[in-house]
Image 1 (cartoon, rainbow, N blue to C red):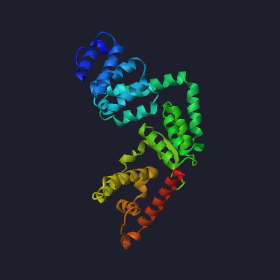
Image 2: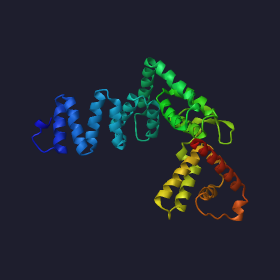
Image 3: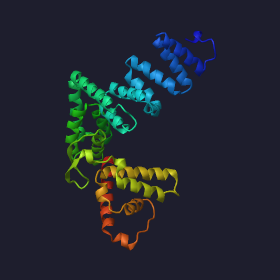
Image 4: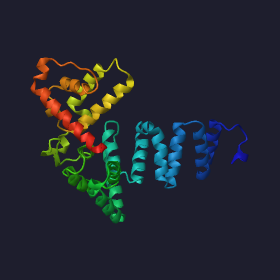
Length: 315
């Protein structure tokens, strides 16, 4: 290939040669040249060209990796967003594809078309891979005996199941108290994210079985008390280093994941709850009225239960 370049090896030169090769149907040569250009200068057009040519060769895993290097650009146009969804489906990322469609529904007009594409892909996969589906579901049902790091991997594996098979397993796991609560909560968040209109039985942090209507639950980041707590926490941490701010905001997110989806019911004094959370790391003074309040005792119990759950996954 080097003998053919009669000008400096620069981005524009490689792109021109790649486009000429693509125009004449020399796709393999075009792919190599686009990759040369992309190595010199990460460029979105080159990225999309590489993805397109890799997809044409059936190299969906490699194409998805390239796409995700500049993923934000694929959300800007419907055609490119469809390309991203096709890549997810080509890698059997059925649940993730549904999550991404819902997450971006405000900016796309072809939601129904995309969901039909997912449905069709799932049906075809189920038709030709019944044994693989059976194996994935069996591994999901054995998740309780796995170490935590492996359980996380198994949850990702389950997202390669078609929707109906995924739901079958998730319903069982949500009421399996041998599975860490944090993992059960991530499964609950997952079914909320793919628009399930059903009632599910779950076990909350108090060990109580309760029924929740999935379609009526906000996503974790949309919970009223989470948004209030995040705002309060950010104000209290303005004078602290960025590293500590990031650490505490992440802890806040995890705490609300463990309480999900009941935080809006359980937290009657969000500001006080934030103070009690910070008291584990900073010197915080509480008034006598705060210490004698019902909310203080409730918050303390919740924080202790959350800490116990987090300790479990570290053992």
